[in-house]
Image 1 (tube, rainbow, N blue to C red):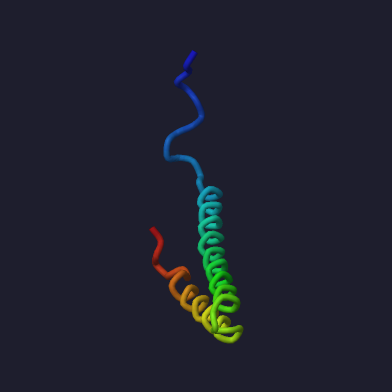
Image 2 (spheres, rainbow, N blue to C red):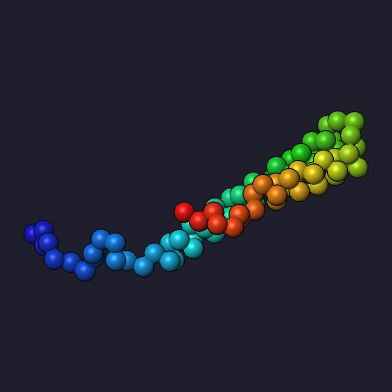
Length: 79
């Protein structure tokens, strides 16, 4: 019933599509989280504090700039 012969051989499969999908999901998660954090910060400061529109916008832009700096892909960071 259990046939030992099959087409799968460990370590010989092309995983380019799986790797590309993983990288896409991680990128969407990383940049989407930054966008949501900036939006929540902006809305919170604008409507719930005395910072107002301008203060909220400046804080959100600073958060996005720092996020892009720290979350960007670094050269030579491949594993």
